[in-house]
Structures are given as structure tokens and as C-alpha cells.
Length: 579
Image 1: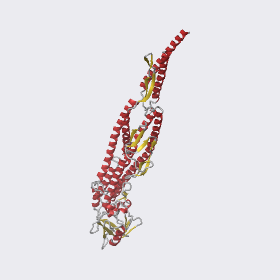
Image 2 (image 1 turned 135 degrees about the horizontal axis):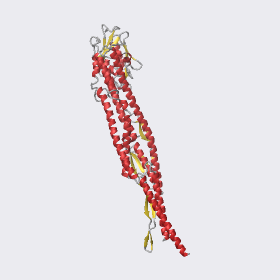
Image 3 (image 1 turned 180 degrees about the vertical axis):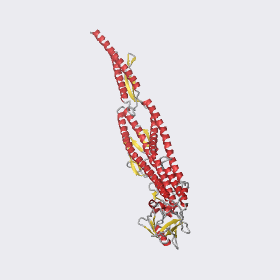
Image 4 (image 1 turned 180 degrees about the horizontal axis):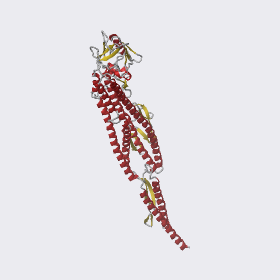
């Protein structure tokens, strides 16, 4: 029995030492991300029977298990992509605050209000050249604001796209790591006689890698029968199986986007479900949804502003007249209809059957006699730039028209000057003749070259269609400019709305998007914090608890050592008797 007691005490020494090793491992990894507290599972050794009695043979460490709450882990996998998605979206939207500016003092709304205020002031004194110069300044300020916003929004899109590339590299690294851990875990647990969970540290590393990956992109995980994990995108695309990891890369330019799609290497099919969460999804939403919508709305404002103002200016007249007029836009083919989409004119669809009148004046500004005007007929789908040039030359006295190498219409009155009126065809505005603005979107809209050189070409009045007489006190065109602020228009196929409404809606939409991102990010961050606390409570290492466990095992170790010491004394006494 003495030797039995020695063996029992020896088993206890070994078991308590191993238990202290586990405690030591916990203490060492108290700050290791993703580490789960481990526990030594102590169990009695199988008893032996002597003289009809069962005697215990001591203790052993049957297993070392990790503390994991699968429900919390799965909840974290669902929360992580959403928390990262809204955080990324909020960050990107917040960076645009300076772009939209203050509605009261800076920004697009203020520039738009200043523009129409200048038009009102000009209407009040149409003969005042200084007010026309002010109108030109405010027009330039407005176009500069539109262009600046467009450039800043495009820069945010490009920045978001660059972040996608960086996060794809991180995702690929994690996918490779998870596949490698699958192999290591299967190998380790295979050598541990198939004990599930024996590879505690490796499983922690894999779980942490999966959580890190879920912050980049939403994923689905499935445990396999060989202790591995199979990963898929939310759309079902396979990412990791056994020891094989797919790599994500950029593919062809995606439909309805100016940016490359994301595909699995070796495939040209876009990966599905990436936009549902994660940092990558947040960047995609910022780039293709939010910012793309702002740019679209901004371009709509620019297009409707430019064309509407050009319609008014083209059929009006200012205090100055010129002898040569050139269209701001040209045609791709002078023999093709000016309303054909092949001309690559964004306003071609606005051209309709109608006419415009061209008036001619001598050097003193007096209408020519006996004829001072010519009316040009435009037939949509038929009239070409070449035919229009020929009609002007044939029907407008003293004016020669031609199409230059750039496809632009050039009208030359020699020593005389010209003016325009009553364009019911929209041809003048569509090809930016006698216009206030050039350009067809927010990035390109600018004050026309003619107005830049002479603010007197901003139309304040209109030519008398019968007599060709111009009244310096006429402010009819200027009033039309003022009225355009609140007139519902649609040049680009969007719902008809006034320019002021379009500008207000853009700012409002941005504000709503920021508010939603803030709300959602706050919610998912609070949920993430709660889940993290729950995981820490269940799986985290508490140094106070570990110290208690260490003392407990230390005392057990000391007691077992005392048993050995006592048995040694007993054995010495027995041997002494024999001697």
C-alpha cells in the first residue's frame, strides 16, 4: 500500500503541475487578441481491485478545453461586418462635410442664391454694365462651386476605390491564413487521437482570423466533419475549403460604374454579396451608391442650370453685339442630323421642330435695310450642321456661315453685328450659341468664352421680332433668368424640379445619409461592445481568478508532496524493523 500511495501522490504532482502550466498559459495570453481561457480537466484514474476492494489510483489531466460560447461567436460574425460597414460609410460621408459647406454662408445653395440675386439686380437696371459684370462674377463663382464639388466627390470615390484594393490584400492574407490553419488543426488533432478541440491555440487563431475577415467582408462559415471550416460569401461564392483559399482580385469595369469589379482570381464573374457589409462593402456603398448619387444629382443641377440659362440667353440680347459667333459645341458629322445621338451632344434630344431668327445691324447698331433679319427653320432628325450653315448664308443678309474643322458652326457678319431671337427649336441652346455657359456637367460647366471676354453679352432684353429694334431699358430676358430659379424643369430626364429645389434636395439627401450612418454606426458599435464584453466574461482571462486557481493547484501540489514525504518516513520505519 505504501507504493500505491506513492504512485497516487506522484500522479497528483504531475496533474497539479500540468494544471499550473495551463494557468500559466492563460496568464501569459491575458492580452492576446482572440485568446480563449483554457481549463485543465482533472479526472480520477481507473481504480484497481485488491482483496475485493476498489482502490483509487490517483488523478490525471484528461483534457485541456477552451471556454467558447458559440452563440456569442456567431453573433459577433453577424455584427462585425455591419459595424465595419457603417463605420466606413460614416467616415467617408463625414469627409464630405467641407464639400457641401454651410447652407447659410458657403456651399452650393449660397452660390445659387447669389447667382439669382445678381440676376434680379441686373433686371432692376438692365443698362448698368457693372451689374452685368457682377452677374458674370456670380456665374463664375457658381460654376467654380459646381466644379469644385464634382472634383472633391470624384476624389472621395477614388479614395474609396483605393481602400478597396488595400482591404482586398488584407482579405487575401486572412483567407490564406485560415486555409493554412485548417490544415494545421486537422493534422494536430489527428495526432491527438482525434480529440475534438485539442488544438486550442490554433482554433483561437482561426476564430480570430475569421472575425478579422468578417470585418472586411460579410461571410458564412460552416464547420466540416474533419475539424475544418468552409467559408463562403453571402452570395454563396466559395472562399476557403480545407486547405485551399480563393484569392480576390479586380476584374473588368462593372456595369453602371466607372470602377473595376471584384472577382475570384481566374474568374471574370463578380463576387456577390460584398456590398452587404464589411469595410469593403462600406467603400463600395460610399463609392457607387452615396457619392455616385451626389455626382449624378450635381450633374443634373449643372445640366438643367446651363441649358435653361442658355435657352434664355440665346434668344435675348445684352448691351453688346458681335460680328462673329461660334457655337460652343460642335458635331461629329456635319452631314448628320444635329439632333442625332451620334453627334455626342448631351442636349441633342432637346432639339425639336422650330425656328430661330437672326438679326443683323450695321456698325452703329442700326438694323440693316431693307432686310435686317432671316429666319432659319430646324427640322429634328433632318437638319444638319451643314444645311443650317447654308440656310444662314442664304437667308440672313450679310452673314456667311460655315462648319469648322471641330464641327462648330461659325457665323461671320463682317463689319456688321448680329443678334438672335425666338428660338423655338432649342438649336441655339443645344449647341451653346449666344450662350451664358459652356459645358454639359458639373465638372465642365463654365462661363462661355464670349461672356468671359464681354459681360455685355449677358442677355437682359429681347429683340423686337418684327422691327429688330433693341431697347436698352428692356429687362424681359433678365426677368426670365430670375424666374428660372423656381421654375420646374427637366433637361436630363429626371423629375421636373426647380433649380433651388434640386440644390436643397441634394443637401438634404447628404444630411439624411450622414444621420443614418451615425445612427447605424452607433447602434452596431454598442452591440459590438456588448458582445465583446460577453465574450470576455465567458472566454477572457481574469488574472484574479487565475491566481486563485494557481494557489489551489499549488496547495494540492504541496499536499501531494507531503504525502510522499510521509510515505518515505513510513518506508524508512519499515526497513528499520527489517534490519
